[in-house]
Image (cartoon, rainbow, N blue to C red; front, side):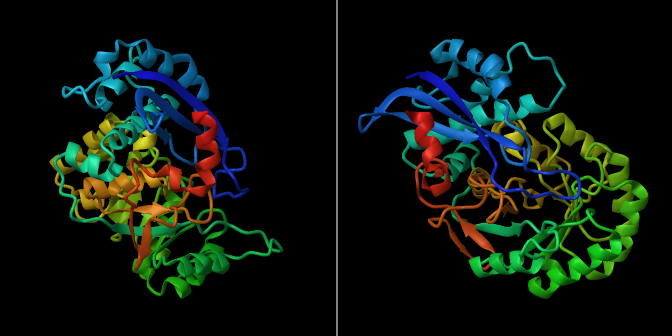
Length: 388
């Protein structure tokens, strides 16, 4: 059994939206396919995955460095000990051959896309959903089929666009969501407070609403926001300042007694260790949003979760960033606190297909083999193009 080919397709994200800092109009995603010599129903078994959303594709790194290394490796060096599966950790290590330590940026997402495709591939070889495969690999129970979910969005809409924040959140509520996340920091504080109150009128309670500053704030602004939003008792205050400004994060944690959330822009175990050492994160309270697709894949992500637990944190405090099918399977398979969803934006990757059971702010993956990306109608044509 061997990997015979790996392909990458750069996909433009749909939608012209912006948070307080970044416009997503130009953002792209690397969709990858890992081919094998295993044939089922006359076709090779293929593993599909993508890096994640809200960044840029890594086609150059994949084509110039990562893919050639994996394809040049001795086939047996990429196999698990049973000879019937591929070893994701070995694939990751092969993809990283001759790379220097540090520099965790786009290459972490490039490697992550390939590593995650191996998990899709292994689950398909076993004809089972990826969450089952993941749970078995890491000795986790699979009794809990669903996890907590919230609808992420809450973007800024210019007057006259024909859509408001209330329109967006009401649409999510009609889909079955009862918890939401909105953006802050893209308007003056007084205006953002009006937006929070508008969202609370739909969410009904602060425990069902989070706010996300996308790393926008300096310490003075962060503390000003923390003071005025505290009475709302929001679910969490996310990505408050620069993700590597651990001192800022720690200072806000001391001043703000509600949960804070961060981690989506940390791409390695070492970054996570620094957050724990210097970021003031509190066991039993704060939320970690590291994303396997941006962090070398599931192998590295599990090491992050193990580090959290070794420091007294609970994996229920982990809510992976991304709002897509891959992280849904990871959250279920590893027994995490939950995951986000992007049901209205970031297509063709955001959100879940109708086969995933949604209701009461929980979501359950389908029984499709692998991550079930083939069930997402927005992705079907792209997957077919890669497989052709």
